[in-house]
Structure formats: structure tokens, C-alpha cells
Amino acid sequence: MAVMAAGCGKEKAEGDSNEDTQKEEGQDQEEAKEGVTLGEYKGLDLTLENPEITDEDVKAYIESILLRTPSYTPTDKTVVENGDCVNIDYEGLLDGVAFDRGSATNQVLEIGSHNFIEGFEEGLIGANVGDTKALNLSFPDPYNPNPALAGKPVVFNVKVNSIVEKQEMTYEDLTDEYVSANFGMETVEAYKASVKESLVSSSANYSQSNTRTVAIEKLQEVCTVNGIPQDVMEERIAKYKDQVLQMCESQGMELSDYLAQYQTSEEDFNAQAEEYVRKNVGFEMIVQAIAEKEGIKAEGEEYESFLSEMITNNNFETKEALFEQYGEEYIKTIYLGNKVVDFVIEHAKGAEASQEE
Image (tube, rainbow, N blue to C red; front, side, top):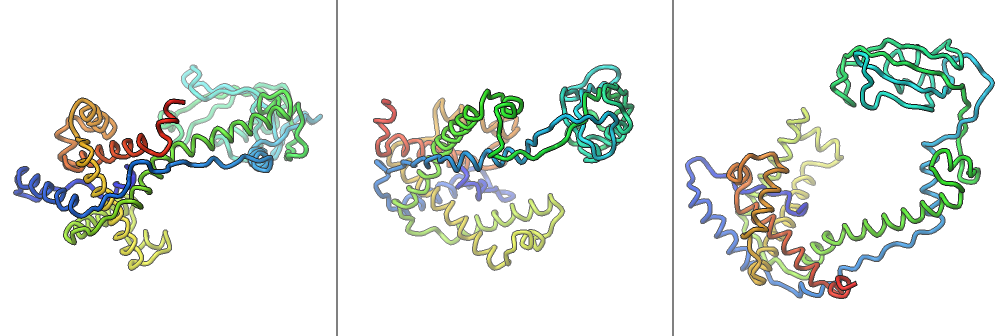
């Protein structure tokens, strides 16, 4: 649950027993239940209206694609020069064997663009159309796209198919030939219809994925958090700031660098941290109250399955290691948060009719 990400589980102070820690966390939960007034969390309207996709939306999307998909027309030129766009086939060999993603056909490359590794484009200057050249090159070190190739000597066999002229394609100039060659559609109208269908589907999927976010927001609207214990706020704010400092340290930054990057003052940062933590803790309190009222518990096969996913996804070896890092009560809070939101969605306005459909 993203809304609860600000707080990690209680860290045990040196010398604390598990029993003492669990007592403290149990007291926090009891305070949480008493500090919440539950509103009508059943029957919430979580409907998200999908925006209408217009012809202008389709045009805007296609124009953004066209910026990255120019048109190329053949020329009579026969010798490759710097600045030319060449249509090539190539195969990359490492120790005589083709390597993954090292080959392509009908690839257009602008000589001098430095889009390929050093020596590749330079090695084609002076080649004739129809020539096949063997380029003995080495990958740079480091090479982030594929670290396994970093610093390795390779041979690229490159055939120059033609020298072409790049032309920027516009929405008004689209042709059946162009959309067929670049997008696999027979006609311009078919391509536009396909784009519209894709945008409509994306809009619907976006709305569906945001139902959980809306459910969380609505819960915070209808339920009232009457107050959060000051010591809980102070502890969680301290943890939040510590996480930010650790992140800064991992990136070689000071807090002042972080604040400058986001153009905010330390005073504003402190206020934002307090508001963020207040929202997170408040939602946890709402979750605990609803879970108790509806008999939702962190136990049973489903909870154990959730723990297994947490262990795997976060690279822990055992359940105990997971609890040691985050605290068992915090893991339970995350689980309950998911279950409570599921419950609210299942009991939302019109949910039964939608499920029947």
C-alpha cells in the first residue's frame, strides 16, 4: 500500500524483548482504534468515468509517434559519407557466435549520430551501396545496456543496402504505404482506428487500476481520525527523515542537495514530512478500526501466502528475517490495509451488479 510506505515497523531498541515490543505495538493499535470515528465505508461510490477519446486525442498521439518515426526515401547516392542516413543489415559476432540483440535488418542509421558504439559509424564511411564490411570493434567498459559485453572485442558484418533521405512525416501527409511499412496497418484509416481503440482501452485500464487509490481517498474522507498520539507522530517522522537521509547518502548527496533538487526549504520539507506521516498513520488507524469491526484478521492460508510473496519479492530467506527488518505488526498492517481496501471495493456502490455482469 503506497499510502503506508512512510513508516517501517518498530525497530527494537537494544535490550528490548519481543514481548515488550509487542506490548507497545498492541497499545498503539488500541489507541488507534479509539482514535477513529468510522463513517459509512460501505456503499461508497468508486466510479471513475472514462474520458471520451476524441479525434484530436488520436491526432495528438499519432503526432507524438511520428516525431520518432520519420519517413525515408531512397536516393541515387552510392558512396557513404558522414551525415548520410544508410539502410543496413548487420550481425554482431562474439568469438564467432551471434550474440543477443546484436543483429538487425533494414536498420536506418545516421552516420555521425553516435547511436552505435565507437567505430561502427566511422567504419561505414566510404563504403559503397551493396558492400558488406567486417568491422572489428570493442564494446566500451562499462556498457550498461549489456554488462556481459563490456570491453569485449566483437565483429560486426554490415551490409549497406542503400543511402536514404530522412523526411519528417506529418499527420496530414500519412499514406497507406507509410503506415504499412512502419505500423503494419494496410490503410491510414485502419491505423487511426487502431490507435483510438488502444487509447480507449488504456483509459479504461487506467481507471480500473486507480479504483484502489480512490477507495483509500474516500475512506479518509468518510472516516475521521480524532487524534494521533504525539509520541507516535514524532517516532514516525523521525523514521521518515532517516529514510530520506539514507537515500541521500546512497546517492552521494547531502540533505541540502536534496532540498535544492526539489526547490524546497527545510521548513517546507519538515511540514511536508509531518503531513505525509499524519496521512499514513491516520490511514493505518482507519484500517485497524475497520478490520476489527468486520472481523478481518492477519491469519490463515491467505495471510501465509501473502508472507511468502513478501519474502520472495523482498529477497528475504525466512519469515523471521522479514519480521526482523520491518516488524511483524507493520507487515500485518500492510496485509490488513490490502484486505480492508478489497472489502471496501467489494461493498462499493454498484459492485454487486458489476460482478454479476
